[in-house]
Structure formats: C-alpha cells, structure tokens
Length: 506
Image (cartoon, rainbow, N blue to C red; front, side, top):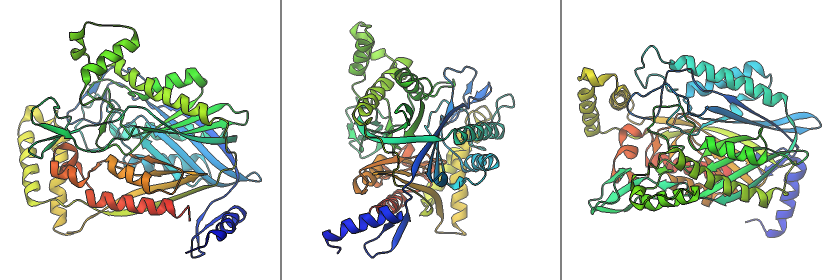
C-alpha cells in the first residue's frame, strides 16, 4: 500500500510527465495536459419524405415533419504549442440507434475530409427517438416509394462528415465546465405482478400489480463548453431516459430534445450546440407509469389552462404539451447547474481517451426459445396481409432462429462491444452500444473514482441488456429476441468499464 506522503509525488509526476502512474509505478494512461480547443456544428439529417420510421414492430410511414432531426457535434482538441496531441469528436444524432455500418460509414467519410484525425476516437450516439427514419438495414420490408436505408445512411454520413469538417476548421481556444443537477424525467417502465411476471408498460391499476421492477436515475449530468470570452457555445446533457414521448406517432420528430434545444438557445444564443446523451436507460421511459391524472392536472396548471377534472384522465401524455413539460424540467435543471458552475472553467484539463472492443458472452438461445420464436415467425409470415406490416417482428424472431443454429457450431458465442472511456479533468465519460438497464449504470457511477461519471448508451446498434430480475420477470425488453447479451455480459461490461475508468485515477 502506498503511504499518503507519496500521493503528492505521484500527482506531481502526472502533471509534469502527462502520464498517470499505477500503485506499482507503471504508466497506465497517456493524459496530455494541454490547451483545449473547441469546435461545434449542427447539421440537419431529416430524411426525404415519405420515410419509414424505426423503433416499433410494425411499419410506419411518415409524410409529415413535425420537427427537424439533427446531428450535433463538439470537437475537443488538446494542443501543445499549437500542435494537436489528443482529439475526441462527440456526435449525437436524432436516431433510434447507430448500427455498425453507419458508424463506419461516418468515420470513413470524416477520414476523407480531415487528414490525421484518429477516427476511432469519434463517439456517435443516438437519442433513441422512435420517430426517426429507419437506419438498420434488413430490419423492415420497406415500400419502394419511401427513403431506402442505404441511401439514408449515405446521406447521414455525408451531412455529418461535412459538419465535423466545419467544427474541426472552426476550433478555437475554449474551456469546459461540468455540473450535476436533477429533474424528474425517467420512470422505470417495467411493472411487476403478484405471480412474479413483469411487463413493459404494464397496467399499474390492476389488483395484481405489485410494484415497479427496478431503479430510476433522475440525475442530469451536463458538460458546458465556452469560448475564450466565456460565452456558452456547447452543452452535452446526460439523461437516463430515452427520447420516447412521441414514440407511437407516424411523423418525423426529435422528441423532447427539440424543445430542449429551442429553449436553451433562447437562453444562451441561437448557435448553441446541444448534444443529447442517453444514460443507462434500457428499462426507462419519460412517461409516468402511475399518477397520470395528477401529472396531467399539473401540466395544465403550469400551462395556465385549467380543465375540468374528469378530462385529466383523458389527457395524452405522449402529446406535445407533455413533451414541452419534460423539456421544461430538463432546461430548468441545466440552467440552475450552469449558473452554479459557469465561473469554474477549465482551459487545460487533463484529457485521456481509450477505446476497447470488449468480447462479451452472448445470451444463449434455448430450444424452447427457438420453438417459440419459430411459432411466432410462422404465424406472421404465413399471413400475407400481416407479413409486410410486421416484417420487423418476423426478422426479430428469425434472428433468434439463426442464433440457435449458429450455436450448434459455436456453443459459446461472443458479442463485440465497442466501449469508450474519456477522462476530462475530474470527470469521465463512458459509453456502451446497448440499451443498458439502469442498474448497471448506477453501478458504474457508484464504483467510479471520477468526481462525476457520465454513462452514455446507444453509442452503437442497441439491443437490450437486462438484469437477472428482469429475465425472471420476462416480457419484451428481457426476452431472447430483445437480448444479444444477457445479465452475465452486462455485469462483465460494467466491471470492465469501471476498471478502465479507475486506472485513470490511481
């Protein structure tokens, strides 16, 4: 054990050499302490209409754009005497997920425009709005008249690459601040019943209702980027809830992130770049599971539009009014946090960015699960009237069947997950490609040595990673069709992420 007297020496070593040293004296990470340069950009990625929408089991066609979809970009570049020594590109997209082929396409497009940038250190995440166009090829059978997936992927990659180039060219000296606030946005959406079963969005007014299955995380973690004059130019807002207020609509909509951006730009300037980061939220929703009537009444009172009591129960909590209410809560929290931290700006924070491809054990498909998936597939596929409309559900079950067949050749399949860990001064950002249940994110935050830990999911193609309790309860987000990785893999992901974080704080 290192004596306390040695810690100042180790700290000085980190500052002077730019290297973090372990208790055994070995370097564990390169952490350049250099001047921070910031570049920002926002770009429209709204698809041409008509467009099929991603995120549900049935084919939905949008012919109306209610709000634009955007990709928002912040470039962090540490420079020593005018030379770049470490760069990270943060890209948040109003999409349901970031499939690997889209991620690679974006990185390749950026590489073609910017020489010398390490594209492996480009982090791309989705806000998980279910009212964005399909980006996952082969998941739906699409009509010929709608925007096709490959075409839309190329459009997104081109738009983002151009915006990254703009942000890169516009880098200027800047500062970063961080803060923690709270707002009621996330509601655990898995209801548990007396017989031990669970259901996503299950009824809570049933006599059989026992409780809500798992955790909720109401923290709002925010990174603030400012220029040399102190003007706020960028904000990354980390919320443990997907953007799913408007999820059942057949329109293009960025969900609650659109009114969040509009409100923050009114406060801090029309060019403010706002990145939406979804925390570990595989079992969360922004819509309440109970007390809906009380929520509706308060929403109307806040609007100043009192209605007759019996109408509250009819109020649609997937409406624009409720979306604006969620945004109001987020904006108030971010504003309060910024007011508290805005004078604590860091112009030369220690920055380290590591990336690992973690090999996680895939969830094994049982014979019973195979038979259930096959039966569901056959029922949908053999009904011509259903087959096209339910093409996503057919593919969902066929994937399980394929996995079962592949297990005969490889009984211990693995799933590769790209994980980023980025230290910025006293805080850390860690990513995963999944819809990760909140329990895992809370473990990461609790066990992290960083002052503040931002957990960012859907920096990849998605698929749920449930807890053991959720698997026992069953239903949509915790069944084999929804899980490429199960609870065992989720715990290994958590443990390895914590290890990656903590070696930056020896």
